Image (cartoon, rainbow, N blue to C red; front, side, top):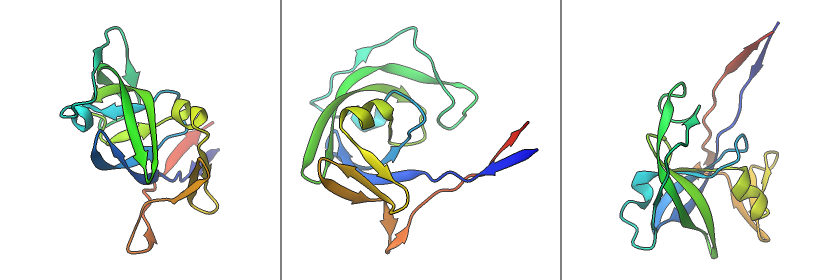
Length: 145
């Protein structure tokens, strides 16, 4: 018997390393991951090289490993909220960044799928929309038993 799921890609707008970008919220993993190009020119970000670390299942080719460049403390700005958090810096992610469970838990972020909002520090952000329409990416995944 096959079950079909249609997950929603949750995206909010923010600023990372001084660059406006789409922040993809991914509740399925534990580490915040950011594309190297987002922080390459940021003067306030120091990347600490990392070896012996593998990240798989994301990016342009989900079956292959991402190139992990290192770790860094990154500042994320959402409206007037600014937080610093450690992130893995990778190459080939296919997204600007993925805010994972470590970030969401530490900063008390709540995702409300029913109302299509994200809550952090008593502020509410709507899922990214264009021309007042929800901007969502849907995928269909099939699971075989």
